[in-house]
Length: 100
Image (cartoon, rainbow, N blue to C red):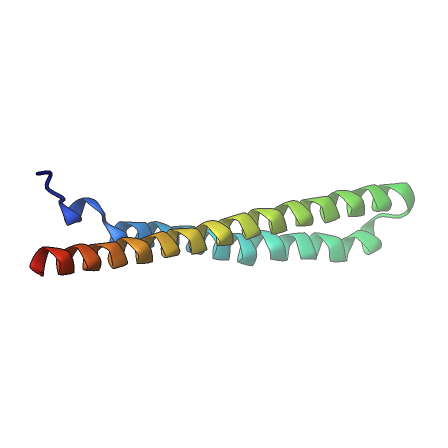
């Protein structure tokens, strides 16, 4: 009969990875997003015409890329937390079955 070592399924490590990713997202949101907004706000005072339009378009594109990245990170954080919950639930069920 095969043995199962529940310690091999470390939900705490999975949650720690989720927290690290969440922290990265917060740093990205707090730093990069605010810098992008600052740049956008300075364009009208510093550039005119085609140059302003081109930079505005690029900054808007960059803003969208960052939003996509943040969405992906947030989705991964949720998936990791769900996975950790499933690991815990499975470990509980296995313990109950081994006891009963």
